[in-house]
Amino acid sequence: MSPLAEYAISALLLFGGAFTLVGAIGLARLPDFYTRLHGPTKATTVGVGAIMVSSVIYFSAMGEDIGISEVLITVFLFMTAPVSANMLAKAAMHIGVKTVEGTEGKPWEQ
Image (cartoon, rainbow, N blue to C red; front, side, top):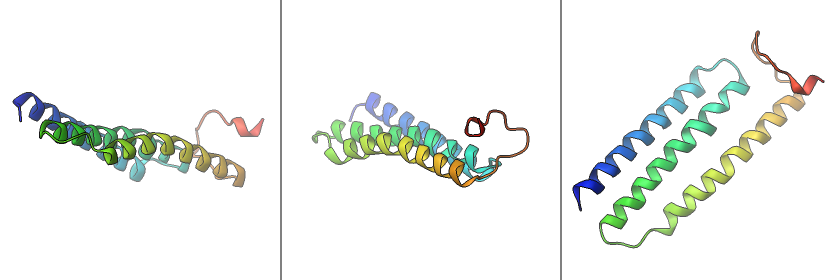
């Protein structure tokens, strides 16, 4: 394996791990349900996507074909995370989950 591939894989793994960590911390630390949705759907999606891309680069550099499983995981993750977050937010608005004090913008109260 070339050193360039190793550097790319290492950088993507560090980048993905950092984004996943930020998403997990956001999920634990943010104050209400609506802001907690951003951690797993934004940062973690990018983090897991970077880790999957590093896996594709690794197996390609080792002389194997691009694994369909990595590609499918990435595609399904990018398709399902925003949709599920939107459905969770709409359900929370429907049942009246409160936001923290000082939150601006309440489009569901118009």
